[in-house]
Amino acid sequence: MGLLLLVLPLLLPGAYGLPFYNGFYYANSANDQNAGNGQGKDLLNGVKLVVETPEETLFTYQGTSVILPCRYRYEPALVSPRRVRIKWWKLSENGAPEKDVLVAIGLRHRTFGDYQGRVHLRQDKEHDVSLEIQDLRLEDYGRYRCEVIDGLEDESGLVELELRGVVFPYQSPQGRYQLNFHEGQQVCAEQGAAVASFEQLFRAWEEGLDWCNAGWLQDATVQYPIMLPRQPCGGPGLAPGVRSYGPRHRRLHRYDVFCFATALKGRVYYLEHPEKLTLTEAREACQEDGATIAKVGQLFAAWRFQGLDRCDAGWLADGSARYPVVHPHPNCGPPEPGVRSFGFPDPQSRLYGVYCYRQP
Image 1 (cartoon, rainbow, N blue to C red):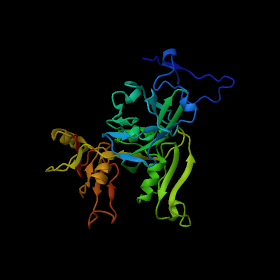
Image 2 (cartoon, rainbow, N blue to C red):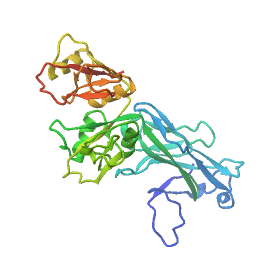
Image 3 (tube, rainbow, N blue to C red):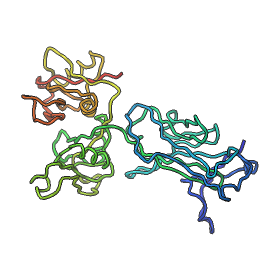
Image 4 (cartoon, rainbow, N blue to C red):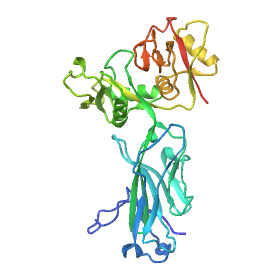
């Protein structure tokens, strides 16, 4: 079995023709020069290595498993199999560093970081090097590169993964424009969500999201979606769209934040209780029912993906009181579907019920 050497690439004169290896250079040992069909120079003599990945974006849900398709072939086809090296990694996005996911040679493989124990190559069919990711997390969405390396020849393809979810604006209990970027990240995480990307906000705008308060996005820009141009929101003369303030200082500037929550594995429900509750009593009531008090992101996800429709306002984990409406009807707020908010009432008030979340 060949020896795998990992060596940092060197910028040597005349080395510009070497393939790009994303920080690793894979060197063959002396006894592995002719692995495969024994004709190590075939790829330099008219044989082309082709990597195929889907052009369309893959959509899936948090907590599920997904397969990122990747196949390779040779043109013209080779009679004997060749020994190749496979590498998957997640590309840098919105300032986040690249992440190595998996490297493999034959049946030997190594996984990295948060992907350990959650990823493996399918390899069900010849030349199939698709990647399966299990127990998908919020941070797993993005662009992945599948690279196939045969000697000095390498080719790669991109796979884009998106999680099905819902974007919602979030405002601090202290009021409008109170969050710097890092605080925005924290409050989204506390609500079972993550800071939304521009692509997620744009898609939400296409689906009808209209919000006049500017909020942080994942790339530290500040933007807001407008469907109905009006005076307080840039003026009636501007076309509908996602308005941008551009990049802002992550620590010094303060705005609201747009969060992104994915579909749930568990269930959000309004707890039937004989009396209205204080915030503390609401938490205890959910616990007594074998659940926890729901987070804002969980309520939005249940409204969007589970059709939760209830005209009763209830406490949530952040101390706000809200209720979800799928089918608007009289005496239940505005005529549009959405999650209504009563803000952050006095936690000692007994005016609301509670929304609970139960794990599957």
